[in-house]
Image (cartoon, rainbow, N blue to C red; front, side, top):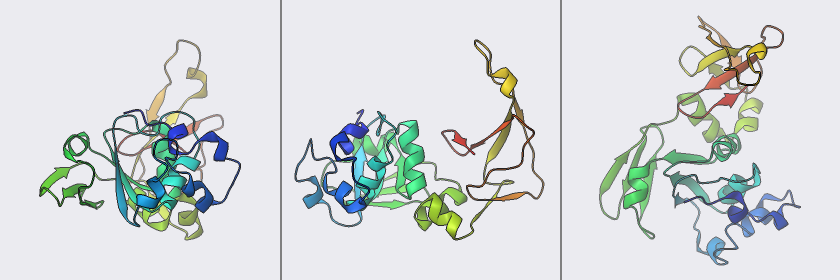
Length: 212
C-alpha cells in the first residue's frame, strides 16, 4: 500500500523531459531490475492509495513508457488518478483482484466491460468501467492527443456537471453546488465551458473530481 510518486520515479530524475529516460528509472529505488523485467503490455498491480505523494505527472509517464499497459490497484491517490488519464495510462480500481492476484500471474483487462481475468487461475473480477469518453481519451493517448483529434464530450450521458458558487467557498462554509442539466450540449474535450462570472465547473465521472 501507499506506493508514492517518489518510489515510482525518484525526484532526482525529474530534471529530464525525455519520457524514455524517465522510464529507465521507474521503480529503481525498490527494484533496480524493474524496467528490465517489464515486457510491453504487462499489467502492474498495486495496493491502496497507489500514486500518493507529490502531484508529478512524471510518475504515470514513467510507468507507461516502461511498457506497462495498465495499472490495477485497490485505490488510487486522487492526483495520480487524474494524471494517469491525462497521459493515457489505463487504470482500474479493484480491491478483490488485488487481494487474489500474485506476482507472475498472467492477466487480461477488458476496459470496456470492466472485467479483469487472471488467466493463471481462471478467476474473473468485475469493476466499474470508465465512461466512454474517458476510455476514448485513454485510447487516444491522453487528454492532449484527444484535443488534437477534435474529440468531444457529450455531457448528456458522460458526466455529472455542477456549478459551484465562489461565494460559498469561505472558511467553515460548504460549497453551494447546483446541478446543471444539459439538453443537447457538447463541449470539445478539455475546453472550458462558458459560465457565469466567478463560477467554476466541476465534471465528475465515476469517481474523483475533474476540474474543467
